[in-house]
Length: 478
View 1 (cartoon, helix red, strand yellow):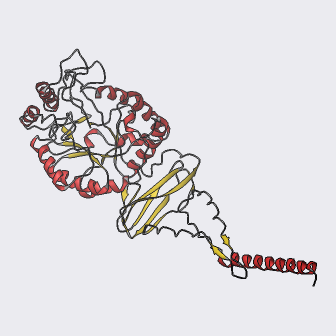
View 2 (cartoon, rainbow, N blue to C red):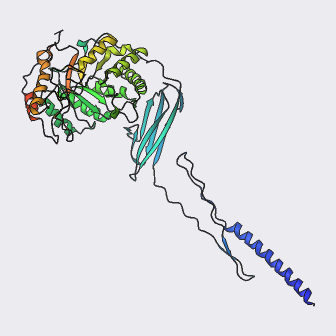
View 3 (cartoon, one colour):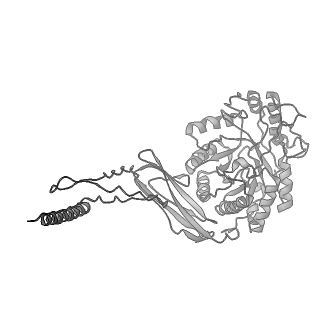
């Protein structure tokens, strides 16, 4: 055989060998190609596309040995933390403004859950809502592991809420029709600021109120459990309460009916303050928006009135009160005025009790009375929810600092309005001014608190108030 023939034979053999190796490589790639691991997305937020895994590296040995395939291993997914069973739904997520729908919650295998801030009891909860604008509702969950989770549903609203809907018309109330405590002396105090109360706290601080013969109190609450607990204690103590659900001006609350039913069931009149100092920035969790507040106020007044509650407005701005009254009238809310009361905050700064130059006075409620008379033709009941004199106040350098002696003298003079029937400016005490709840029974970090403050107790004031002889306030109709 010639050398040329041999060379051709070798080339043909090499070509056949290369083809066989290539076929073997293709078969190995098909057989050993790793399968993709599926990705589960917990939210609608898109995840970035993963980079492709590098191709396997081929290491060949002398023929006819089989090529070795080295593949990049795929990482095993990290086991998910057990979340329990969490179901949060809404009947419909596209509605007309003011249309009512129901939120539904079912949870299992978790530690705790809160629907819009209200605890979910027994693993099940429903909540009727009637939004007037697009809104997102939230379910907060504490997992069995202790981790926090959140579920949300968003409802999209078409149009605007119509005029105030009063499902029934309650009879108008005259001043003498409003409930007052037995032995009413007009003396009141703001209770604790937390809104959550233990039995022991209630007993301890109510005993202090009774020692000072306090007959009225403004009480903050955060949920229905503490509302009922506090209502029973205050009823037993014979103290009339204005109840303030802790809300900021951006919030709507949909359980007024339940709360009012609780109060009526335990025998407490449903004096319900709606919102607090809406013109003050620190009450907001976003920039102040008067239009948004007025819209929320319309719905809130409607719901409290429809449930049979007494609607308590609260403003420290004359302009905001005026605008609110005009807005309620413009939307058909005038019947609400007949079951409405006002909660002024007449702080005296360091002005004496007779001071009347501006609204910053113990007599500052008279300014708001003029607005009511002008806008709706009468003055509703007033129950001051905060006010009096803060310890150490030096706001106006024309007047002395409020020391212990002035703090005592000013507050005793104020409470004596209800005994003598005469204000510090010499005018008769108005029938509409029911009570004055001064700030504040107790707080360790507030030097204006009468008890337990880091600045010490206001001992002189406390003892002087206790020493006021018992009396019952008289009205013009008595």
